[in-house]
Length: 349
Image (cartoon, rainbow, N blue to C red; front, side, top):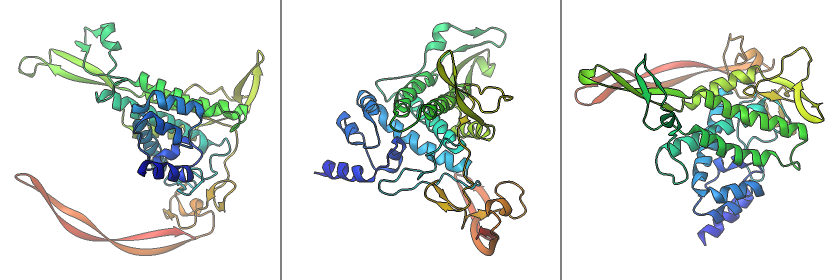
């Protein structure tokens, strides 16, 4: 009875995109649960049923993507606010057009799902994947630096492959997007995965008598997701405006302005200019900037002049309490005092 009620609620509450599972209380108890997620299309349901043990990782990846998007855009006019309402898309209508904002969301979502799946693979708790042993099998060794591949490398290739099969299946539906928008979304999905792959780190451990480090064993590990978000934000700032063209009878995306160089596989691309997001507009998904906190004197996008769109701002003083004068006491706790500090807050009208 409980499962039936949960399913009924989900059919009403989830939005029309897969990332809405981040805002639901849905749990993947068995493969039949996949069929009851309204936000998945038929191809995604099939992927879900074949990989039901990976779906909790997908949900955590969706949560991670939203959190990282909100961090990267916290000082911009569009700040990645989620709309947790019945039958509403997660980000309202903000991603309906092929804007730079949509490009970033697709890329960070793709990278976050891959990240989450990869991390869970290395935990040893999943049957369908494990560590990446390809480096050890190659017997790659740098004799000069005296190190060799060993340990449990994070299997980012498995994570990327699953992210591709699950997320790209959604994008390819022609009923949702035009052909050029499909190509844009697929490109940005791949850009997110490629940035994650190119950001992998080498970690090492020393071995030897008396700490001599005569030999090091090394493995590949995931970077912090924040580093991936930072790189994708840089790609957002330098995203390429593209259009659809044909070469050899095949449609491709090329720069809209002929003098610009073609985007690489890890660059973000977009088709439409962004709205100004200054005022509420349900059609464009803009919530406006009224009530947002701005920085007085800043000439960047977080400054009161730009963020408030010329409407002005109000100023108020607040008193906050915070820990201060902290000391470590042996053994083993930290003792702090509570200090009060006055802050000046500027808010857009």
